[in-house]
Amino acid sequence: MDSRRLILAACGAAALLAGAGPARADAIDGNWCSPDGRQSMTIDGPRILTPGGARITGLYDRHAFAYQVPAPEPDAGAPVSMTLVNDNTLFLTVGNGPQQTWKRCSRTIS
View 1 (cartoon, rainbow, N blue to C red):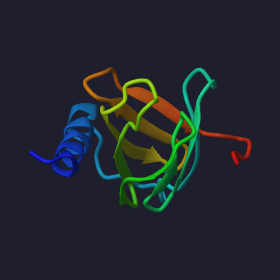
View 2 (cartoon, rainbow, N blue to C red):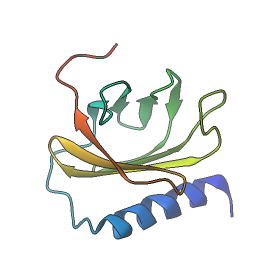
View 3 (cartoon, helix red, strand yellow):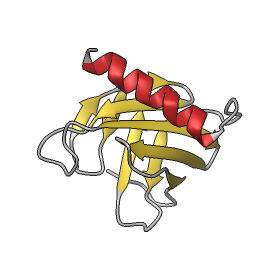
View 4 (cartoon, rainbow, N blue to C red):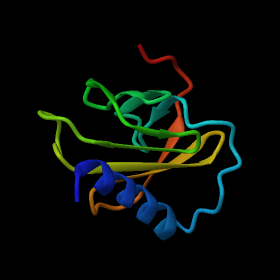
């Protein structure tokens, strides 16, 4: 299975495991902060500024996003899947790790 299909499969699996129904929020685009506030990322269509600072392209859907962690970031090579829950919340999973709940950042990320 190629990496693109693996990422899409992981994104779908994460949504099912999360029990998430259809997202009712506008779009996943924007600035997001980790639960502890130490990490952030920005999604702009298919482009993402990852928590590790890489600017890469991922698989974009208005209410979901997936990408493969680039080297040399922690968990390099692992699939990351995100599903928008509402305007200010998304579920994020890295590989087989636990589901994380990220919130929209109140500050601007550059």
